[in-house]
Length: 238
Length: 290
Image (tube, rainbow over all chains, first blue to last red; front, side, top):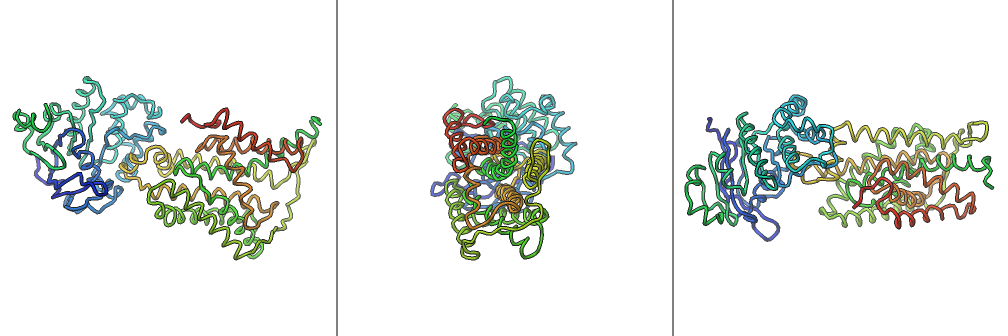
């Protein structure tokens, strides 16, 4: 595993209007890592993701991606760099076919290799191949999640942010999903996994951050955090 | 009165008139479908495009049917710039602001035209204005036939853009899932502006098709937009096939109600349909249920 730093966040502050949601975040993701950010509802997980992808403007602090400062960049520029955010709630295009959904994943990046990347996505998610001409809105929840991740993969991500991918999936599908995340990771994609599902996430991650009220209460290797029952009780309410 | 000798020409004429209505409605429904606003500047832009066609003919001597290839790209650019640099920034992301800004724009455009060209009604003389084609049982006016063909060409072109190009896919994506589109790297402000540009190009084409047989004054476009709005509601807000079919239906309704109720009451039928649609099928012919 290389130690090249992919994403480096320093003292990041962000929020909506007067209310500050992120109150000084420091985070790094190295090439080839799976890093998980855990926390319960409303602690700022989605705001963190939205700030990293340029939807929400950072109020202070720095975000460096592969060495370049991106905290003032707009979402299309950030996507073009290969920082791809698969949002909570899938946000697929329900009125477009599965194929068109995937193709739009390469709207801003990796467009010349669209056809071969689509094949690659179909190899990872064979069910999408069966549904290629179907409107995305007619897919099941699990299939929509696969499509959302597939759309992200179409951009050849350097870093893939997965926001609550297991939300609303049956336990069996959650198992399958985490296996697929490992498979994508094995192909060399660094992953920032933002989850409420503590047990599964800590199993797949290299390192973990625990987010509580807009700040990281704890960070460390996934194994260390998994082994600490006190922290789980305090910050995750388990 | 129901003699086919009268009825069939009335039907055909209605279809041909409806084609131009459809074109205006196409622009309106496209903008509604993506930006989720009624573009109140649509009529004023139609008027402006009619003036452009008028001056292209009187000053430069370019026939409207040729001028369309200059005026529609020009109005695409105007529409793009209006959305990108005026409507978008002035609205701060609020749909209701966008609505008001387009209303304001229509006032500005209409009065600028009034200031520049006064309230005179102007027409152009083209040799084919009264040309007809003899079908044996009736005559068809050539300019209307051209309009009829043009609306299908435009609808087909739009459909191809929407299904085969990335910008078309992006337009459809933004229409339903703006946040997801942003995360796919789609520049929503650009997509909005392209959509507004396409809608404006549609009225520019309509203007060039109208000028050979119609007149222009600074409020000429408004009559069409009121009808186009009815068509958009009839066809389903945001639906392209709905706009085309709705336009043709409304054209026929207008023609038949002129026949039965007299010319001055021709438009009564349109608004009866409008009220009936709102009562019976508020989502329109092709609209999805809310």
